[in-house]
Image (cartoon, rainbow, N blue to C red; front, top):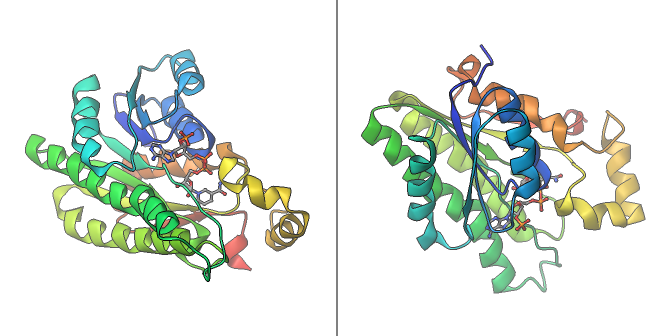
Length: 249
Ligand code: NAP
């Protein structure tokens, strides 16, 4: 039920952090892996190949919307078709809202929201043309549910991503396409380096996590495998928290 043998997964931003852990987790469940991103994914490629799975890397700046049709075409050509799309790539910019710049607003919205929609559209068009379904998994955030602080464009993008997940689920469920999201809590990656380096914020965050620790990227892989598998065929528009209990507080 949870096997991904014979499936082909496209994961964005998989050279590091959560995307890398998701790519390796999907490979461990049997999927061949295509990654798209701007940094070399050598470590991820080694881990995927060591599991006996195929690996293909596409070089792309996902903030450039005009590049997305090429990414979708290259992903399709890599192994014949794509079955699973994980929209993981994301950035964060921190500043007081009184000072927040247009550049920091647009950069975050472009990568975290606009490119997710247009890459999903490009892949879904392939599925419709090929008369096959597929799975889309968006990487949301606690800030899909909560306000946060000093991250206005990030909160707007991740709250928007929750809405987009539900909208696409409604539009595409009837076409055999499952659109869901995972909302990670606080994970130790580059994205949260500034928070972990700030002793006060680090203590406040840890005090609120019932599990009592930051998430390790590998903690996310199981939820991704589940949503990518046929076990989740009747799941549409869910936003699944993997957060050590953060939202339960
Ligand atoms: P990360 O270590 O900073 O990884 C982000 C990934 O996105 C990297 O592969 C990065 O590539 C890629 N990326 C960023 N901008 C890109 C662009 N313009 N084009 C192509 N690739 C781009 O952060 P992470 O924590 O693993 O974050 C992964 C996702 O999880 C993000 O969507 C983030 O918002 C979300 N998330 C993280 C946490 C957490 O606690 N860590 C919590 C909630 C949600 P480069 O290495 O080239 O920059």
